[in-house]
Image (cartoon, rainbow, N blue to C red):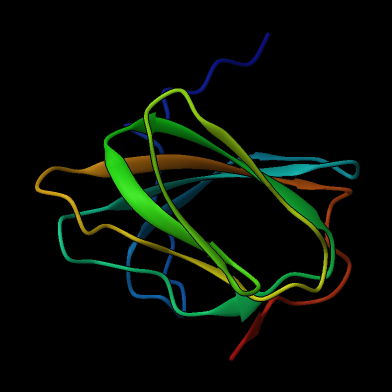
Length: 112
């Protein structure tokens, strides 16, 4: 059994300049734990595969295509492949999001 404490997982450099740790990575799927401090955001980007986000803590605004919505803890948000999206922590506290990519991407995410 493999157990990962997402809060202690090693972060890796990324084009968004935020704390992000790949906590699951197999040939079938990939999961990344993202921590956005108040005022931080992801750059608008496109992933080559479907993604879903699960908000673990906090509140923030998610943008997918032309839609924009404020969401909070225990919310799951779907994001289809090749649709521009991003997260903005416009709240006062931390925003922690688990990002799951299915299937595992074979090409790179594109920053817009």
